[in-house]
Length: 203
Image 1 (cartoon, rainbow, N blue to C red):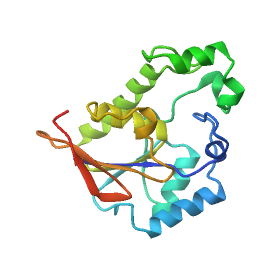
Image 2: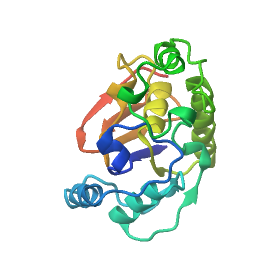
Image 3: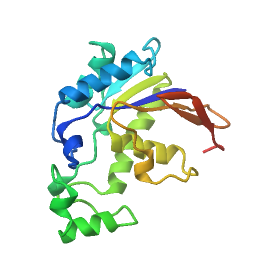
Image 4: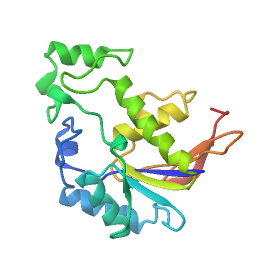
């Protein structure tokens, strides 16, 4: 099975470095233009034979449309960004002295939740459940979603790869193609650098 993962284009929250999960922001004009530029460079796969999924949020729908036009797709809420609760639409500078925020960013177990939101462990379970739902359908798929979702999936699929969370996060509009054979090795490549595929031992 082949799975293409695309992060949505730039939003105001990306520009201002704000935590943005459930807030339904649109793409900025520069975000739309950035997606169109990447599309003109041919980094995105053709849709023929692919099941298409999104998280359903506006920034993701606009990204899909900027690449492919209006196409049918399935919405999976499991692929929505992490729920940041009380930290939503706030920056590190606004939160850095908040004890609850400090506890959250220093947590190494994934069990500490954002107040009113999700923990990393709960978020990961949700995302992986959605991923398994896609895999169980047995069709090659394209998923347009969020940076945190893609990072979570790549960490899950390639646990032996020595990258920390933010090293997995693609830039807006970019992502990965993942090859998932029933047996043997799985591997991935960057959408923007398909020739640089990397092989990994069986997950």
